Image (cartoon, rainbow, N blue to C red; front, top):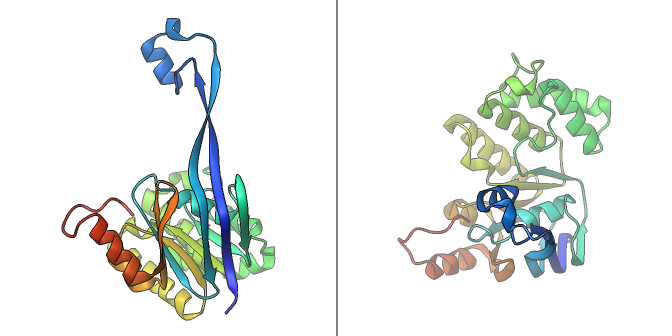
Length: 256
């Protein structure tokens, strides 16, 4: 089976500028301008360090770890939103990413217009988007609102449209970041059913979630990140079991 996503010794660092020891404008104003020495300093924050793994075509990879472990950064690297600081990334196929819900949606444009913009950004033709529009609208349950500006949508409506676009554009690789923790019960159930259809169809999925039971049941392999590094990578039940043991069964488990 061919490899569809591959990370080789990937690291990602970010620059963080400080103003005379202040990291934010609020900090500067709170502590006083007099404390500002006029120096702008640069610090580096490493979100991921020397990460390596592969995902075979048609497999589901779960990504777990406490807050700040680098999970969302990893998905953004797969999506091409970030470039690695070092190392190599290979992604074979069209990626549909549902990371921060509705990223790329323009609030003053209608739902219909945003569907077209999202589809074009993914490389679809206008005719293909037109053919998919009915299913996207129906799945999102927005038939009566598709021509309203998305700034008038509730958070639930916004989420449904974003999810519907992501899963209906026929991607080769689907990236999901905590998306099943939002929305009403009925739509969550429908979303899980659609992801099951993706699995059956042999799509490749990278899935970040704090729900360890779902991760263990859905995923073939699991990547456990700690402080930006790989703590463990392998068969789902084994990695989730080790994670639970590390943070103690029955104790509050850090968000995965």
